[in-house]
Length: 317
Image (cartoon, rainbow, N blue to C red; front, side, top):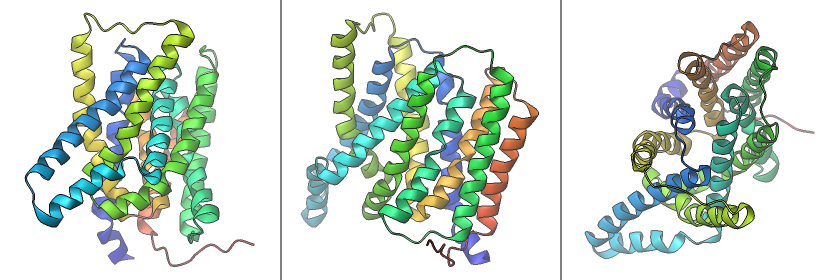
């Protein structure tokens, strides 16, 4: 057990750091009045341009087999496997951004974090991978914490009006993410490079973002206005490249080193950080029930680290 814990410290901290950085999303999204579809486009295009430049420079400065390796990266971006994970990546990122824009984050966060249940089902029944007793126990414990949080915040904010459709959007984003993670993990274990992973994930997603803007325009006759908003654009791009760039890097690193389900339990920390951001920044007041849910989530994370041995697989009938 000690060997397991010490060998997984850095990947685990990487996932937790990613959870914290991603919990900062609402601060930059809610205080920015750029068109929502444009925000989504900026996210994917920013990452794609930066990673493309990085890979292009590496390609230009290498020779032989190393150069061929980078040429292969460029070719792979439109392979079926990459297109699948890039599409899922777009669906879950766009979904959670939209949901957090129009609904309280202490509701959208817990709903989104239900992706861990989808992940367990994918791992066991689609990929036919062994799922251990400890993994199931701590996923369910974390999910229980999320449910308790939901109950507490519902009782605290039931008078707040918001369109319930955005809760559905958060739920669909959770499904997309739960399907995305195991497929992406296979790719990240092959590349072993978070920068290449980001390049793969944002290429086709950038195209989908452009399509989303055109669909919005023709469906609603809405025109995106960016005149006089360049300061907001620059701030948001810097957030994406620096803050979320670090978050993605540490998440992809942790996911490549940890079992996907273990990474999912650790990523529940984003809910805890999200509640703290809501309390200190948005002045949202959690109930005692909500705090109880947070403590359950923390217990699931600590328990997984202490009892993270994956040698006993769950036997399903």
